[in-house]
Length: 372
Image 1 (cartoon, rainbow, N blue to C red):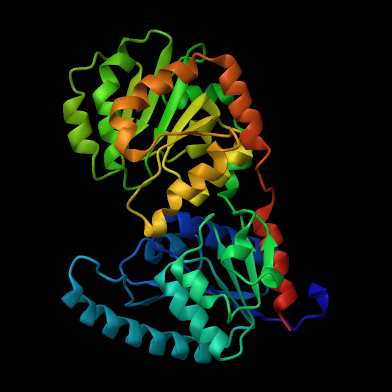
Image 2 (image 1 turned 90 degrees about the vertical axis):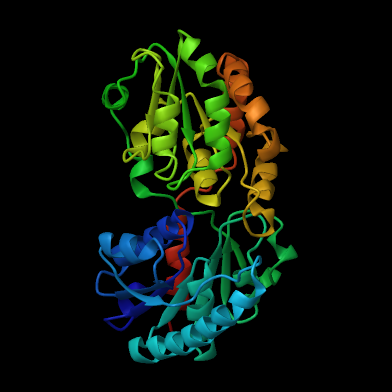
């Protein structure tokens, strides 16, 4: 089918704001490039956001829009937001006219809304990918305009036209599923392979509640002889957390770091993961079959992380601790769970059943079908 197409296919990919949008977008682009090496891919992102660095680092061109989210606290500030939205829509339309894409792909985020609106209004066949169990505003607004909607959860016809929905799962970072040398992984963090390992991740920027919860019980964790902890604080909190744990002995088994560059190693050593409930993180944990305690962030649109977490916890595929309960419950729950082999085994088996494999390739195939 690909052989019959014109050479030099142009593909527009848009989305970003967080790693949870950028990783899937890059994974889809990589899959498309593999299937169509002659294609030209252009990303559209939001100025000043993470994608403006991460996408070029992955080898793709990107154009930025001045778009930003609405300010719920300061209504007057939204005059500027509306001006930026109007300017972004005009710029997106100009980018589409100049680039002449054969197809457009949106993965969520403000820039995705502007770019996909412009593409679909200029009759470019378009596909959006919704990563969460509760659809975002941008994708709900775009649903009528686009041709296909790739989703990761069941029952998404609550938000989208049923005839456009294709269940593909969420693409994850490709290197996570490669075989890893276990001995090297333990060495990376200075860990003992004979001990149980808890890996705590709060996203690239960190999570205040997760960090405070660890801090509240860190001495309890350090006192455990047979448990070690890899604690990723995020760059915003690293100095504070290091200062507050500086009295821990060198052999406490608690490693405090701002960022984990080798997540494949971290997941390899993890017997139990503590994580926020972003869609990308959940998809990775499902594929890797990792037992997890989810602490959903309450500070996201439509509280979608809680809904993501409930989609797992109601199937006994994860333990859910609400943000407001985390300081009191997280460390005790983690220690109880890490010692319960039967619980770890059932969590691992149940979360593995929810995995959608090869998502990036499946989405890429749907994109290719849309190219006339």
